[in-house]
Amino acid sequence: MRSQIGGGVRWLVYLDPQSPAWLLDRLAPLVGEGLLETRFREEVSWADLAADAREVTGAGGDLLITTNVDNDDALAVDFVSRVQAAAREGVRGAVYLTDGLVKAGDRSYAWRDRDNAFCNVIETWEDPQTAWRDWHILLGRHMPVTAISGAPGWLQVIHERNVSNRMRGRLTDPAGYRELFPGALDDIASPGRIELVRDAVISRPARQMREAVRAAGKGILLAALGKDGLERLKEKYHAVR
Image (cartoon, rainbow, N blue to C red; front, side, top):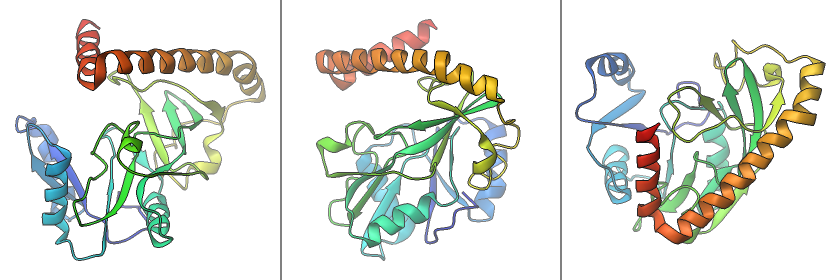
């Protein structure tokens, strides 16, 4: 967040009221320097986010841009500036930077996701919907959608506590992307030629098949159960895990 090129940004972090002391201690210096602002809430609706955005920013500009970032992921240093550039060009509604990286262990993967979780919404202050209006894959139900391709704009970090993220994409050399994600890729070595070929021929097709099956299954469940039903099913599944 500190490395973002674009200016005029306020980062709002929502915390559970029962957040542990170690987390608050970790965030305190960042809050102290003005990098982050925190709100303690048990639940946050999109209407709550709109109200908080108005309070935090003063609603002084013509446009509101909201962005969703999960706490275990990262943004490229030019993420904000690219979204702001789209706003200056007249883009409104949901905006996705489609290309990103997935970090899994000591390897990185290039991944294109048209409606990824790093969603943005560009709108006026009149009845703002925000990036939390709906699931990131469903924002198109409520507003126009614009997909912007290019260099990786975001980084998903896969770890043992991930609920829904998985290793996916094309095995790639992180060397060309380290400046976009300062410090986040330094522990990843460049893959060798044999490893790249093995990934292209064997591993990647298997991942693509798995993703296709999963996407089809999720679509069927969403249509049959609705959002609430699918959420309950996911909660039961992860509780069992």
